[in-house]
Image (cartoon, rainbow, N blue to C red; front, side):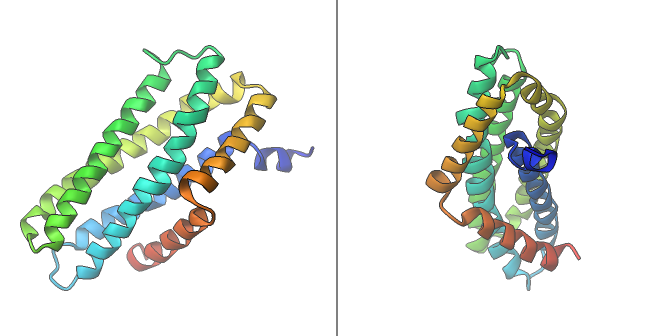
Length: 193
């Protein structure tokens, strides 16, 4: 197997690539929340709802699902402690992120019902969520993923890759991954250029 093919099939690299999409979504989130004050920007609220679906389905169900259901247990089996170690920190971050997304969803519903006073709360949760995920991604890319690359066998990595595909198909739905990437491209052109 050549190096490019090996890199392509590496489940840890797949998670890193997903991080790039997540970082793009956070940039879009910041731009959307800046526009919510403008009366004519009702489209921004609709786009924020679409982005919240991305956070729920792609970030949490798919990306975090791959980590929580497969990667973290594989790391634990290889001797990486859950409590007091990087896995426990990552799980706590995932829970905090879920809280911010729930709060954003609730405040967005209030905003769409006509309460413009919640814009500052939407921004506060959006900024907190973005900050949390940016730090989380750094910790995974610089600490957790190198541990995984070093400690997990090729057999375990192959098993992870198969499990990741199963999560994308069964938990997220066939083709949803690509649909979310097209949505991010669309929103990035709309808000970030």
